Amino acid sequence: MNVKKKLLIVTPYMPYPLNSGGNISQFEMNDSLRKNYHLIIVFPLRTAEDLINFVVLKSKWEDVTFYPFYAKRFSKIIKALKQVPSVLSRLYNKLESTGKEINETDRFVISSTSLFRSRRIEFDKAFVGHVKKVITEIDKINAIQVEFFDFLPLIKYLPKNIPSIFVHHELRFIREKRELEIIQIDLPLLSRLQRKNEEFEFFWLKQYDQVLTVSIDDCKLLADRIFPARVTASPLSIKYQNATPVTYKFDNKLIFLGGSEHFPNREGVNWFIGTCWEVLKAKHKDLSLLIIGKWGAQDVKQYENFDGVKFMGFVDDLFSVMANSIFIVPIRIGSGIRMKIIEAVNHGLPFVTTTVGVEGLSFKKDEDCLIGDTSLAFASRITEIIENPSLAQELIAHARETLVQGFSYENSIELRKNIYESIF
Image 1 (cartoon, rainbow, N blue to C red):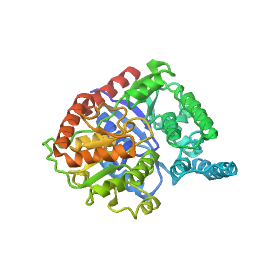
Image 2 (cartoon, one colour):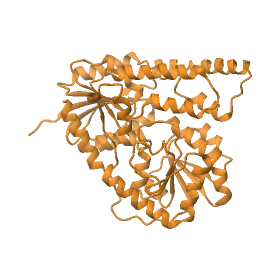
Image 3 (cartoon, rainbow, N blue to C red):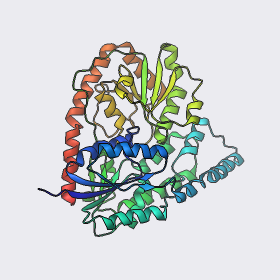
Image 4 (cartoon, rainbow, N blue to C red):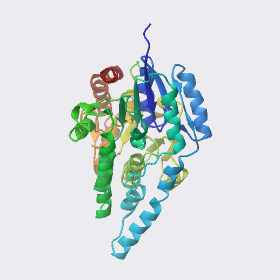
């Protein structure tokens, strides 16, 4: 009997429930890898809801060893975040003194950007001690894998004699560059912050033995500045669960999938509702927009006066809610891949996206999907599908074929296993 190799995974996000792209990507990958490796997973549990979800996850993965860190918050991270409003206040005061005005879009992006937080990652001593204790208690760990930018500097606390892997779900420096590209006011301070954050990101990436990106595009961007052999693309995918052909008939609804905790989602929804929605409603009065995922009460209240916009929260039967809709991906910032697009294609939906939204995936413009990068273009592309049922069917069929050929679940798992075999 072969003994499974031991892989310790340390992640800031428990891979359940499946209410975000990050959770889905972790769950789908680990759900298969646990058959070949002894997975040991460490993550924080902060709320009573987390505890309930943890019980469900344990029942699904009985062959996985869990070492959750029980804490309501990481005090040092919270302390660092509290400094952000004071920085913003000084920034706004400086702009006002020069007579510069900030429009609503710029204010929205600046107030939510990660630029002020990216280098303020401090780990609670108790959490670091927890991770070190796990490493000591587990006999012969073969490799340690850290996930997400939030935990990037954790490498400084890990032993040098165990191979280290970092899974980079989203290149932070690319996301922040794109945030600066969509604001209209010239702020040299923000540009300086972005450059310093980029240096910080690459410094810590270079400390790992291997860096895995979730897209080939991201891999190319990193390989130019990190020794190429230490950066590998490991694309993610989702199991296809609906083997029978899906019949499609548009039911006057658009779907956005994703929560507000991920700022690119918030910015994308804000842009779409603020600049595209009324244009679409003027032409299609019965149209509704269903936003699926966890959104804060303040975000929901912000859009309560927009007719037809509904926040659904977490839904148990995603397939039924999404059926016969047009899937929208109005993402203008970020990197990596949008797992939500793979979800849409798996559900047999046509999708409209921005160029950034479909980046890292091999879907082709006007064949697998429609792309619009301005408000007018994005709304027009949605109208094209609404008014042309045969176009919807063609997009669905072509996208499904592209997914199977280039991003099949089986291929993504085999590639990851091959990468691991080369490391440990």
